[in-house]
Image (cartoon, rainbow, N blue to C red; front, side, top):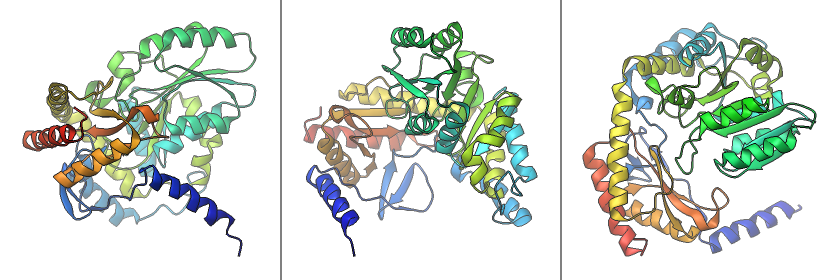
Length: 394
């Protein structure tokens, strides 16, 4: 038997071990809570995207159970054949109203929402202008589209304008695309300035609001609402897997855009639709977002408390403006050691290194939630300071 693949993989894995970047998956026992059991150890959980604690809310659990009892555990088909259930359309209509958009289509994940949309609306002969720190799903969608890709330095609107000027005479559609909140750094895109340039040069405007949904804007409506630029973004992507507490992604825009994606977005066409329990739990989550704004208030109170503590301790938190707060340490091996020693002290904050971020900007990434108590956050801060001093990070 040929061992070409195994030999190659062994070499690559050996290199990861040598650089001390090899990671074993942490195993969660029980629910995704602010204090949770990972690998049999109770830890303060600073690794979860469950921003508002909705994944364990009784309202979502009850909605999922009832939908399962009524509709079954699966839809049985792709959306374009026999897998579109009334509950899927109810969810799309609910999200469209929430986002002040004409229409919405739900995808199986935020990743497929981005990759499927970009590759559907752009093609060979078109040009995509993308922020250098955009999410991998955007990058993959750009590559799949076969359009020409131009990358501008992170949040650099001067460079963005120069890029737009440089492609103005080229044939085909132009698309400007950016994350709303950047997942590794926690900073917010300068959306009003980006929109102004997209409109000035006749480009389509697209934003990925995955880490903004349920976090920014009124009731968590996202970056577009945060900046008050409704009607100026052609394509809004969001997720149902983070603050919404369930699973999936969505795209909001004009009715024409959504009808087109129904016919051309490959993940929509070739993946079985969500189980009814997922759609029902998402519907329940949007009800909570609309009627419990205090959830987001608590998220931001905890965020301010935690960030202030990290700054006082002397950690480098980069450009973070949101509940995502990196602690930048430099070397990848040091970031992994920092994470491992924190875990032994009772805090779960994952190490992030190359290729997710540049080697010189390796870090641990922390995320606070609305459901963390002050005592849990203070315990985490005390552990971070103790381990950070022991390792010479502060």
